[in-house]
Length: 206
Ligand code: GAR
Image 1 (cartoon, helix red, strand yellow):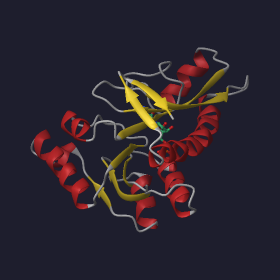
Image 2 (cartoon, helix red, strand yellow):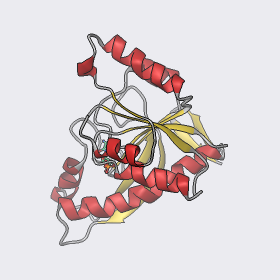
Image 3 (cartoon, helix red, strand yellow):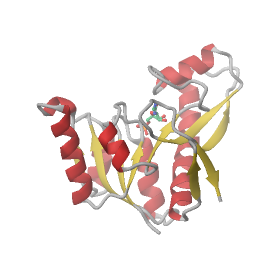
């Protein structure tokens, strides 16, 4: 069954683009119905416009209260009939009200093999800097459920990526991003095929 996806993104949006392409080429049956960014200059919003996908710049700063901000997000999700949320480089926490409403229907991609290199401050290039500094030989990407605690939801899929001796954070980021672009559509397919079960914060793939 195809899902109506909303992608939240703050940055360049290369994962968003990979998901849109997977949808257009039939690798997934779901479609991106809405893109939301907290950052008006995000490449992700330009990508959405390019592919004629509805998009919104919604930032807490534009609202008097967190409650109003959250209510506007929920209204937009309803309007676009969104039934599944993807975080793809979204650098903000979603309000617990949204997490509760979409329990086990919000997933995130992280550019390392969680629980390694996760938690506060571990996002984007900082993750790859930490991996290089720790002399890791293997890193990768993780798709996990989003819950109320940063990077702690159950892991759904991981893909390993080799760290080469000459890598710096930038070269590693590029290689990991290529893995991410394959991994996100794979994860979406698992949900389309209803193959993901969660019990006691553990994922079982049928
Ligand atoms: C991706 O590498 C994603 O894994 C990471 O931000 C990048 C966004 O790239 N997310 C995190 O670090 C979350 N903790 P993109 O905008 O090109 O998709």
